[in-house]
Image (cartoon, rainbow, N blue to C red; front, side, top):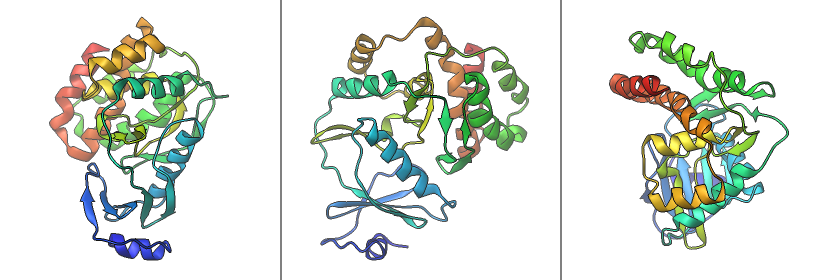
Length: 262
């Protein structure tokens, strides 16, 4: 389906052409007037509904996100946010406030990392929750491509991960999912769940893109204990398994490095 057809299905109209925007690796995004229209080729069932639920969850917790106008199996219609200046200190304030929140328990609705489906889960001890909900499905999907690293991944989660308390997470917080709008920093394309903030911090460190100004402001607002710092490579395993799944064995070197650092 093309973006103009999706807008018509949503009962929305806009003047002007559909202009391609950056949409990551899994989707195509177009600006059509005041809307950002997101589509994906052969999306798995529930993909866009899960993204919309994540955006609503973040918005309820004080995070700036694009408004959701319409969601269906075919795609998503969002508010187009006009670009603005970089504000890393503002992003630090927003994320520190999000990560400081405490929820009743670890919790995840059925969702996705990229287009990879992840199960729902609620409650329990953190290490078991994270391993069984996030790591194990990807480990099973990639086992035959890991060249013997599978047992090493399993062994990483025999010891408990540090637990500061259940916090709401973006869940896929690489720099491409941060957007600086005229109104201030915003987050895009979440893989929302309630877990430990180290998961977000680990992804932010994995591929870089967050400058010193951000980290200084974030740490001043919400210092990161040494035990959380030491756990970040174990959380990065989750994201690198996803990259092996989507993009192939070229990521095995990076996977080996974080295993070795754990």
